[in-house]
Length: 326
Ligand SMILES: Cc1cc2nc3c(=O)[nH]c(=O)nc-3n(C[C@H](O)[C@H](O)[C@H](O)COP(=O)(O)O)c2cc1C
Image (cartoon, rainbow, N blue to C red; front, side):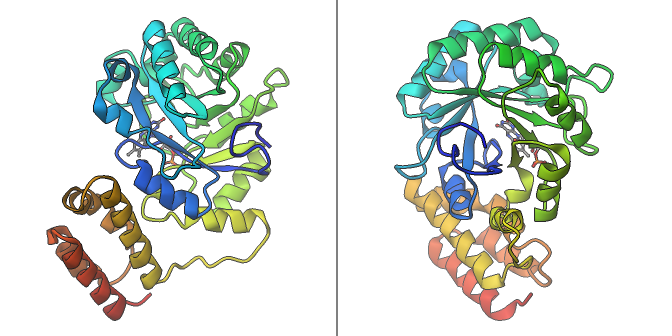
């Protein structure tokens, strides 16, 4: 159990990972309906927040009024991070998550995200200041280290625990690995094996099936797991994982009609929030995922990519339902 808002009575909680341009409120709603226990916003630049950038506020709107909102922020100026955390708290965040893991060049070149893995005193100071600035629990998400020769997972885990975070999410890769190779779950497990580490640990990296998820809990001893890329196009993964954790049967295969239904819902959620035109454009990056591996989908994908209105998109879904089979 992890004593955090929204999941304090859920055994072996399963999180949707924060993903820029993916985990907006439209997609979070889908994942919550599919059984994700907690979802995390896209990361938000603390500097943009304190400048009152409108786009940043959109990223922390709730997907529905009762959503337990987890907002992730990043930055490397402790004053700004503390101010940003207060703004996020005022806007209803139940948990504030600190990003110390983003490996992308344009981020680390600014000294933020995973760059803090090379400046642990600053990581500590930022965390301490944010923890002191807000009443809501603060969590952090990071990687094993900058390179495999320079792992700092033990040090970071104990350091962040000391300054008061309430849970740690560890992605089992280093910064230099970016997304290549495999997540090292042995290293994630090592954190938990240290008797001095007492806060909950959420493991992250490569979970793409219910079987994998079960293995993470059973063999690596984590308190929670976080699923990212596999949920894109397969939000049903949360249902499958929960069924597996409960020892229940589940269907590996998702029907064509169900894929069309959820993809349509995703589109409508986005349009309710933005507008039809923007939603139709934004959904283009998701169609492939929802119908991944379905024989004969290609010509329909082309039609979906060319559709500009709800009517056109829905007509393609009708055709897909009629002509494709799984
Ligand atoms: C498109 C994309 C955007 C991401 N954006 C964020 C982000 O904003 N904050 C963050 O902490 N991690 C971000 N990540 C990393 C994921 O949260 C997660 O740690 C990583 O994908 C590994 O988990 P997975 O193998 O389940 O995908 C992003 C990953 C992807 C693929």
